[in-house]
Amino acid sequence: MKESIETIKKKFNSELAAAYDLETLEKVRVRFLGKKGEITSLMKSLGQVTAEEKPLLGKELNQFKKSAEKMLEERKTELKSNTSLSLWEKERLDVTLPGKPFKIGRKHPLISVLKEMEEIFTCMGFQVVEGPDVEMDYYNFEALNIPQDHPARDMQDSFYITPDVLLRTHTSPVQIRTMEAQAPTLPVRVIAPGKVYRRDDDLTHSPMFHQVEGLVVDKGISMGDLKGTLLLFAREMFGSDREIRLRPSYFPFTEPSAEVDILCIICDGRGCRTCGDSGWMEILGSGMVHPKVLRISGYDPENVTGYAFGMGVERIAMLKYGIDDIRTFYNNDLRMLKQHQIS
Ligand code: PHE
Image: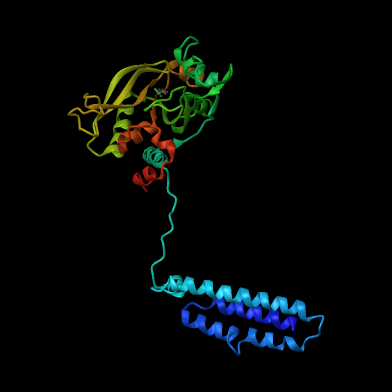
């Protein structure tokens, strides 16, 4: 008797769960609670059990009957409220529909620009080298002819770790490390991309940003080589008719030094808000490697010359994609990342 109650309970539950319309539900009700229904006949057979079993089994059967009635009633209301679509219809799966496309990760726009820069220079015969982010004062300043009292050495501008160790403020220390490792072999023709750190934080400055350093040392290298290389770079990066200009400047590790501008990519030189009405945009610092820098790194400035340049990757990316807030690169706002999907 007890076992048949269990079996019928299970059967009832599964049939109820499969009743997706009112018609089927009514059939389930009749099958279990109708005059000849399974629960009804079970109640009738209560008369055959022993006197001591009777109260317990009777109670259980009664409870089951009540809950079955309740469940049927609940299911009925549920199905009635779903008259337009049966549950089955709602859950039906149309396997002929096209699937939802997977969203694939892509290169960050900043990394895309960096890779593009690397590509342009490697095509010109440059080798990609790297140096440490945590750098010694010697490489970051001393060997680059940056005197003790230079403002760049100020604790205000640099992140010092110990008095002699800091987060590099530019990629120029890689110039020294490369020459030291290679001297006196010629030619040196490298670019050094990487992160640099300065105590800056506003719309166009971030405490961490990226630079690409360039260095060429060989016999007879001139300012003309520098200009030709940078012109080619500017045209590969910003379009085949892009003009550049060199403006005299000062860096302790280059002599002479020049800042390089490109003709404004927004207004083509007519003058606009982005270029501050000058028609030109500054993209990098450069110059001929200072003889002291060559000598300290193992090259003889009487026999060889070289040029160097350093450019900000964020700056180039901002110009190229018309982004005016540097923080856009680090917020990882998916809308921006999708908008500047480059490859
Ligand atoms: N290191 C300089 C800077 O960060 C740029 C530079 C590199 C200038 C190489 C000249 C030569 O501003």
